[in-house]
Image 1 (tube, protein in one colour):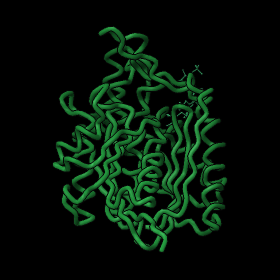
Image 2 (cartoon, helix red, strand yellow; image 1 turned 90 degrees about the horizontal axis):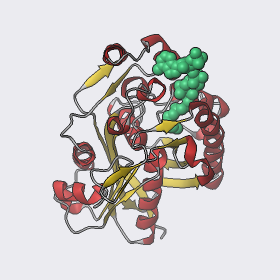
Image 3 (cartoon, rainbow, N blue to C red; image 1 turned 30 degrees about the vertical axis):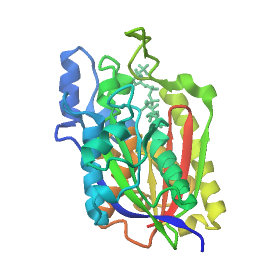
Image 4 (tube, protein in one colour; image 1 turned 180 degrees about the horizontal axis):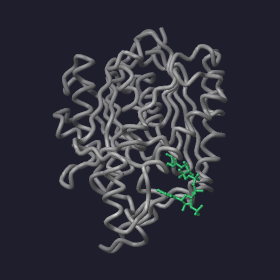
Amino acid sequence: MRRYSRITGTGSYLPPRRLTNADLVAELGQRGIETSDEWIVERTGIRARHFAAPDVACSDLGLEAARHALQAADLQPTDIDLIIVATSTPDMVFPSTACILQNKLGANGCPAFDVQAVCSGFVYALTVADAMIQSGAASRALVVGSEVFSRILDFNDRTTCVLFGDGAGAVVLEASDTPGILSSDLHADGKHVGILCVPGNVSGGQVLGDPVLKMDGQAVFKLAVGVLEKAAHAVLAKAGLAEADIDWLIPHQANIRIMQSTARKLKLPMDKVVVTVDQHGNTSAASIPLALDHGVRTGQVQKGQTLLLEGVGGGFTWGAVLLKL
Ligand code: ACO
């Protein structure tokens, strides 16, 4: 009998400090940076975001999300035999945030590692966990997307600092006789490294280069809408399903206009799209599991439904996972 993987619990966590656009406009104004609620809402759909306190790390946000997902799956930390954390804002250069989170959670002993695919990180991590479960290498995985993007923002650059927020989402993925994850499709094209990157690194005890986010917004926008459509059609074809079989599109929450364009191309009405970008901003690898958990906990997304998860981000990376909840 074929072995599949299935999501049995979801969880998420947002740090308590919430900044509306008005709050951010006021803070940036004190630095002499001009922006407005109207500009941010019209261009991105973002109305608020959460920022973590200075002493809160990526693993702390991930830990809370993981606890909620374990509770939803009715499991204990010691039941978990694989931890994958998708993040671009790790606690340390090394060890991985997954190892730090594993220790905080009390799941010591199981394999734990990070996946770095920026905003596509969660679909990458979910695909790796699914493959490890299908192969028999793991049976109960914790897959976490967690980010503190506020730490890598340049608050003097209004073209980027209004877009991002902090948060974490998690799922428990368990071996199952029935799917579960139906298909996935991952890609990267490294020739686009320069359009979205944090070009700094640590060398000889110094930060070399610029350790804050740089983005060519229009280039990112154009690439994102094209690849998301392709990845969606690829996972549908692999699973033998059609656009009309999708109950919910849960895309990376970067920008409402990218989501609207993707939905239009897939002939899906916006009421089949889970939208949290308005309240969370872009939380990179955390955005898909945050949106998934939001959908589940609000009762929008129900067991047995077909979900299309899609991510796109720095690298350039992109991918999709089609699953039955
Ligand atoms: N407030 C007010 N004005 C601003 C701001 C701001 N925060 N930022 C830029 N502007 C100004 C610019 O200076 C420019 O002024 P000018 O015409 O006088 O030169 C004007 O607004 C238009 O700027 P554009 O960059 O052309 O604005 P655009 O419509 O492209 O919107 C945006 C910018 C929102 C970044 C858009 O390009 C976009 O959504 N790109 C996708 C990028 C994205 O979502 N990235 C997230 C990370 S990647 C990912 O997750 C997939």
